[in-house]
Length: 227
Image 1 (tube, rainbow, N blue to C red):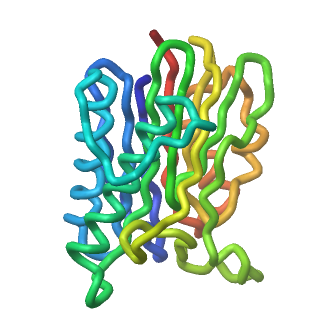
Image 2 (cartoon, rainbow, N blue to C red):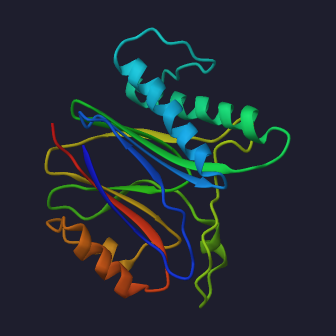
């Protein structure tokens, strides 16, 4: 997997995420801090450390059990996020709230991509000759209050605020010509929904999104699938 990304802000600021990509393309982690920037880095590092050890068949211990209804790959990224949540809560936010983190982890092995996330970005897949399909949605609470005015982003779920957290997770089959689309935004631009499956140039897609809603900030990532 290979990620290309673009961050767009206006008078309204959306935090820019930290990104980790493994050299072999097997793991991508996107972490966005709502508070202290170093907390996003800490959460990202914990997920990368756990998944890297687990995929290498290193015997790792975890306070969180594997769920038998999920594949090993999904369990890896889910467990990594749960560990990150525990560390942030106990180390930073237990007595007083300092910050929270949105995080999405993608792990590819063979023809399967597993994901786990808390908050944005939302995850879509563009299969060859098919329309854009949602896989996992990171909601923005400000979308519930939208009128004619463009409101600042308001995350609905964050790591580190509570001893437990809800993790959306799953997996899907992918082919080399497929593309994953990652979007952190209050609303999904109509030009993105209507994206031509053959359109893979990030600058053209983002320019159309900006033309649709010039006052709406967003972060967009396109992930090319390859062996």
